[in-house]
Amino acid sequence: MTIFNLYIFDKFGTLLHYAEWNRTKKSGITREEEAKLTYGMLFSIKSFVSKISPHDPREGFLYYKTNRYALHYLETPSGLKFVLNTDTTAINVKELLQQMYAKVWVEYVVRDPLWTPGTVVTSELFQSKLDEFVRQSPIFGIRNI
Image (cartoon, rainbow, N blue to C red):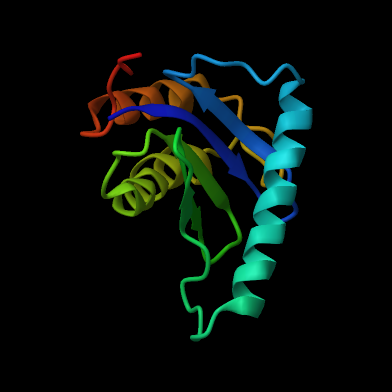
């Protein structure tokens, strides 16, 4: 199992943070363009799921899987969107994203008096704690190609 990358967006689609670990293929476009495409895709998928679902989609869209990777999604009550790309064998990613939000985001971003909501997170402490959290997770690993 492995983790490729993470996007954190605010409720307006602003990319607040991006990190990558075991990503082997680059997209060939800028990070900003890639973030806009990712956010637009999420917006479309969420809309599609809410309209087409035969049941009340309380949790809405949680993830999708291709034959190469899986995209996992967590939206907080405040509208933050955590998007984690993993390999297809990763399990319990929803719980990992919830813990990432509670133990890393809230502790090292929300409680940081120097951070202004809606701005890019530049805290080196947050970046190091996020990296430590991800590397210690059971789904982090080096991809065997």
